[in-house]
Image 1 (cartoon, one colour):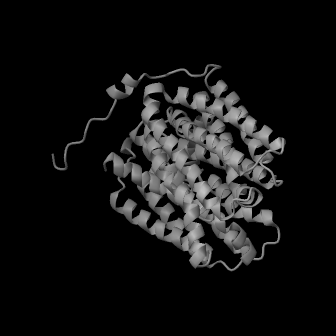
Image 2: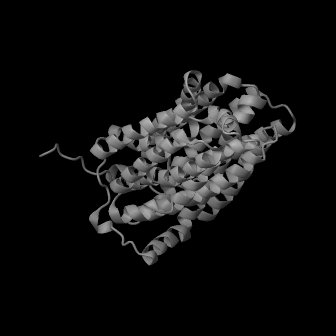
Length: 414
């Protein structure tokens, strides 16, 4: 598999998870109304339950993949996502919808863990950050178009067809992965399925100082984004008056975010994942603080919110891929277990805090912006812990990755 196809397949697997969130953002109000949900804030549970269960479920696929291989686990997860999404499409009650969403989140978690694991099997350090940014650039097409697709579906059909489109995407990715996804787990790296071995591997991931600050910090920064996703339709679509323009604005912000992922892919090997992500984190904190002050003064409108939130989201592009690469660097042999425990911490912590930020929605942008500024500041403290108080250092120069590129594979049969 060439790099372009590899990036496309990994992005498509991650996109299935994003599609399960973003495509239904314009439909949350209609779904809750159709299924008789009295509290308007409860519509956020359609997103929050999925993300929380995805975080819990991410504890398991890594250990299974370290034993049985990445390919089997990925295919099982894609098939399970299809089945539960179909149940959501035919659900007759809000309770059944939430149950199906929760199970879908548990199964779909592997589509977050497996790309990370496969990527670590093939790359390391800044080279991994570069490839992850290319994956994110491709993957970000989904947040760009998904809300608009959801809005378009509701113009001609029921909200249930939103889940139908997600099912169709699952079928496409399953066929692609079943035909083309190779097994990247080396036989000598297979781990035993024993609680003691699994617990030991996860404990190692949780106690490595060089990694813990980055995946905890990444979880907190992501919590701010989750808080925005949970209440975006209420804040931007209703309070700030975007109305039917909400999917278009959401897509434009995601498109700019995809551009910053591409920029990160171009510069990270030259400047280093630490230098790029540390700078982005500081800008993220400052932007969140400025945005909070604007909201507190009651001066927030659509034309102040969108530019400031776009800057924050762009900084997340520089933070996420680089934090992930740095935190996985020490765990070559147990990449699956490490990716699982990191995804678990990031998703559970991020979704729980994000849900709290979303449920604190009071008709203003204050909870979201304050949450971003606070989460970013705590993340900076955690990074300082992992780095021994030093920021912007470079571990390996660009020449290291040029010297350590894997040899080109000969043509088939060569």
